[in-house]
Amino acid sequence: MVGEEMSRELGGSVLVANVQALASSYSGDVPLRYLRPELHAEEVLVDESLPIPTIDMRKLLVDDDEMGKLHLACKEWGFFQLINHEEAEVIEKMKADVQEFFKLPQKKKNEYAKLPSGVDGYGQNFVVSEDQKLDWADMLFLQCLPASERNMRFWPDEPTSFRETLVKYSSELVKVSNCLLKLMAKNLEINPEQFTNMFEDGRQSVRMNYYPPCVHASKVIGFTPHSDPGGLTLLVQLNEVQGLQIKKMVNGYQLVLSLVHLSSTLVTLLR
Image (cartoon, rainbow, N blue to C red; front, side, top):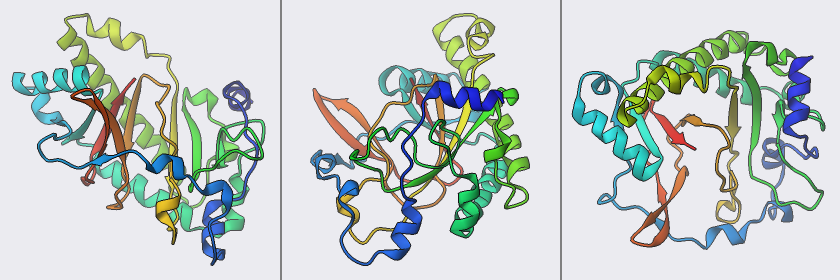
């Protein structure tokens, strides 16, 4: 299958235990591979005087001031929260289906377990050795576009609406992405079509993360700090659990800023 060839191209992973099952069964110390003291040494800044940009999608289409805010967010931050994007309904349905998937019995979820040779499926990715430190999280990673690269062997059929919802979700995110790219091009005074054509045959993948509760939460990390490899990342926070952070240079210092959850907001990251 084409999807399997794509997975091999992206690289495989050593198979590891599911954190959700581990969290529900252990009662003592966190296993050594999950302890990450080196990642908790940075200062976390929560300061209302340095608000993370919030862009209103409706205003973008009619308001030059909002376009200016978008330009500044792209130039100075590479990161912003997008509100009023009109995709709230499909986002809420996707969030509900993801929650139901992770509530399935472990045996059922394991039917979609990733293979050592690929990235699609349920588990963890990019584990390259038996002694590598691990994230306190499980995920479901699926290639969505091009449609020919979907490997349906890893697309859950429970809940029954999952596949249909994901196809709609994928399609709506393409619309949002294209709209944002055209507006960015307008700010840069370049041909919008020329800009969006660069991504016309691009790939889209969806990563759904589950972070189980941990009695020693200060000793683990849900997702290792990283930079995304794609051109544009649209991120949805499923619930009010805090934890999403970004790094930004402020007055010559690299600080970690925490984001406050906003319902149905798309957090947008530019590479």
